[in-house]
Image 1 (tube, rainbow, N blue to C red):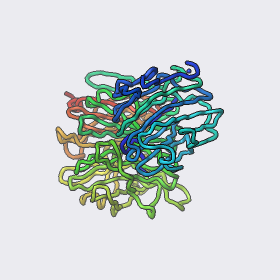
Image 2 (cartoon, rainbow, N blue to C red):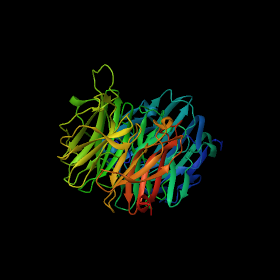
Image 3 (cartoon, rainbow, N blue to C red):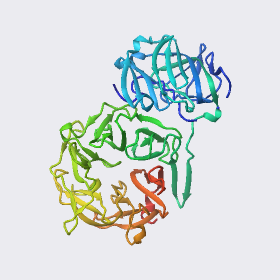
Image 4 (cartoon, one colour):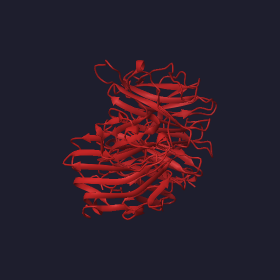
Length: 553
């Protein structure tokens, strides 16, 4: 099964989030006419008594949400092109759906016990292509019941009685037709989906967009990356946590789009990948490969001894994704950490994926001090192998040093520099002369830093290196371990020295880290954690400014 629900020709989503009483029998659509909806101007039209739409931009959301207690959603629907499509009913963080192309009725998500694509039947047992059907979803007590044409498709106990919010019909690559849709139960506007307030601050040509603050059932948003699409849009894919703020809490990958170079962003998430890990999937790297395709890298976290990176490929500008390819084989299983925005493709075509290893099956305890290595692919991500160097970091006095969350950047002339966060007040660096096959010993650099990751990328328009990090040169002892201030610097000599240090944020209670860097035209986009220390990694901010700001112009 292809995990993204909007994979083939069409997807029907019904989102039920956290969003109070209009009364029993509230019609959302009747006789093909939208009565209490939002988004009917996105491609929906009434044809012969049916409301229909085709394509991924069409979106029809109920104008009321479902509150606590019992409810019934009853809809008369028709799906065309089922054999080539996927369609799903998303409910409270779970997905019940059909994949006609793979002959599956499936369950996905935390509502269904963290299932990921679990098959429970065959679509042809319930639907026929182009034939109208009655879809009914009910909750009585804490029991959920889904029925199609009076035939039970799924029953589940212990789903709870919490508010579930608005639902949305979202067709993708086929036609969705709605003759009627009615809700009974405790429903009203006050249960509509909560939307995080977007705060925007502008000063001296710099724009700070607090795009993804935490909210109900979404305590953390972090570790994302950008990709520029061929139609001019920018996609930001990030880790959307659902069950807690910790690194092991449940999470999936969501996306937001910008059509103006990162100046403004869509207000609602697009599902990129549902959670397919026992714990979560997280920490995104996006890469435009030299053959034009897009690679999506992320970690699938199953346990403390199995956290490994995967890659999926898109040939249609991030609309759909291939099946995942594992970077690290089972015989080398362990708890590896790949940061967001870390994977690079060298001019030679080789892909480098730097990781830190912290645990293996059979180890008595994890080694959070870390071992650094790099995985390589010479065939555009189809196969992978480990480089020749696995190393730990040591101080000049030969004492073990924490080495975590490595990054790499290709230097002019073909050398590659690796930079690693440590616990001794500076970033450590290592160099490769052979395209990442082997690496010099990790040694302390002059980059003053807390135990927090740095990001280094090249500015295409100037050729200089840009570093974004927490500059701790000269900080007081009280602030030595804090991830503040949030700063930039330039290197005009391939990483030997860093100049033009500039401050973006300097709140002493702030927490700024896990930065994705993208140069879009003559502007820099940074996607990074930006909140108070008390909430640590809960909020993602997009910071946008002209490249010339880095040079003091």
